[in-house]
Length: 124
Image (cartoon, rainbow, N blue to C red; front, top):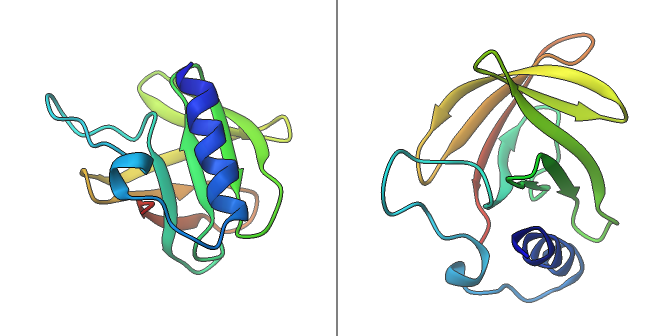
């Protein structure tokens, strides 16, 4: 159910001109440490990824990525010995979590070539 709701939100955000209210898109954890899981994040800053690109890390390991006006792409993610790994097109990439708060999720993905840093913020 959460997977379908998050997917619907990601697809809806990718294809709509209007913006849902923040409570419709992402609800920060009210108890415990901040989490990036089951929240819709958008790229706020990156030298390599387009601003506005959406990322959703679903609790079942599904990764949904959608750009403004584009079709969503699917990958997966997992924890491996405490580290984050994103899998896109069957290729795993180690990802460093540089910062994680309710308002910022900053990562460095070790793709082939230079690492890619992405600052994600809650989608509104």
